[in-house]
Image (cartoon, rainbow, N blue to C red; front, side, top):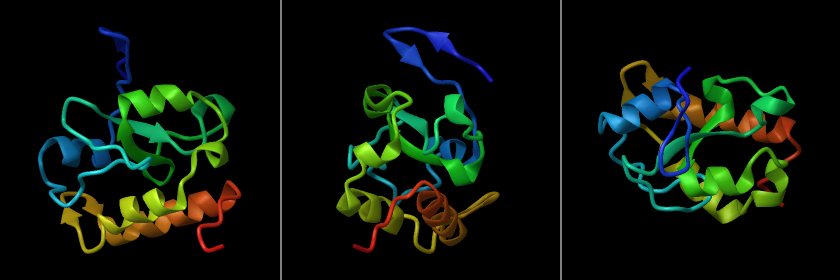
Length: 124
């Protein structure tokens, strides 16, 4: 894991999700988990369950977000930052997406399962 400091905090987690985004292989993904527009310069991995609270650095616990939104949330409970419309918009970007070592449909199911474990119900 690489963590460096420049113009604020830079998160150095590496994962197939971010790697494929940076390679341009997730062309349908334009917006982050919080509805923020993503770019190669601003994208980071956000832990749904913070690592400091026992969350793992694994695909099922990672979503893409802007560095700003990631820092804004910190390690607070995800439930206080959920906008159901933005979450569904985020997930729909991955339907049918396939890239090296990444399947968007499987990823959607993993994220829905993780959110459910964290007490997030998207279907109210």
